[in-house]
Image 1 (cartoon, rainbow, N blue to C red):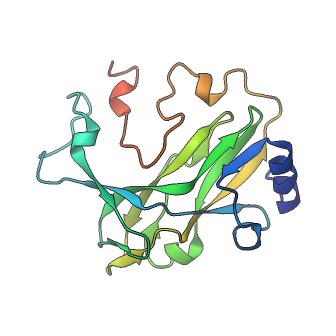
Image 2: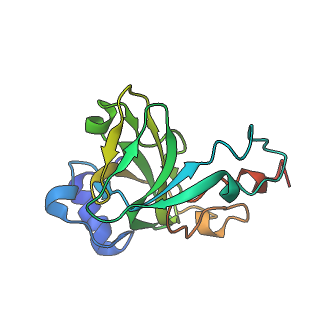
Length: 192
C-alpha cells in the first residue's frame, strides 16, 4: 500500500521515515510523495580513458568518471545523449518495515531528462543519499540547477519488518552513501 500525504507525515513523526535536512512540506510534500532536491555534485564519464567497460576487468569505476562540483546558483548542463550520476541533497533513512521508490518528475521527463534509469527501489533499512542516474534523451542541452526539485519518493508499508534490512545485508554495497556513487558492480558475487 502506497502511503498518502497524511501517512507520510505520521511516519515522519514516528521516525519510520527520516529525511535530513527536513523538507519544506509546503513545497515538497505531494499527495503521496515527497520531492527531493538536486545536490551540487555530479559524476561524468571520462570517455577517452577506456574504449569500453569490461565488468570482469576489475577496473575501479571511480577511474571511469570524474567528479564535477557545481557552485550554488550555477547550472550543470546535460548534453543530448549524455548520462551522468548525481545525488539528492537529502539523506533518507527508512525503518525496517518501510520501502521507498524513487520516481522521476514529469516536468523533467517532458524535456527528455530521465532521473533514474533503473533500480528505483530503496529497501527497508536504507540509509544514505540517493544516487540519481540522469540521462538526456532529448535533442537539446538542458541546464539543471542544484537545489531544484529533481525527483520524488513514494513509500510503502511492508507486511512485516524485513528479516535482514538493507544495512545489515552482507552484500549491501551502497548503505550510508553520501553523494553520487559510481557502480560497485565488481563487488557482486558473480565477479568476486
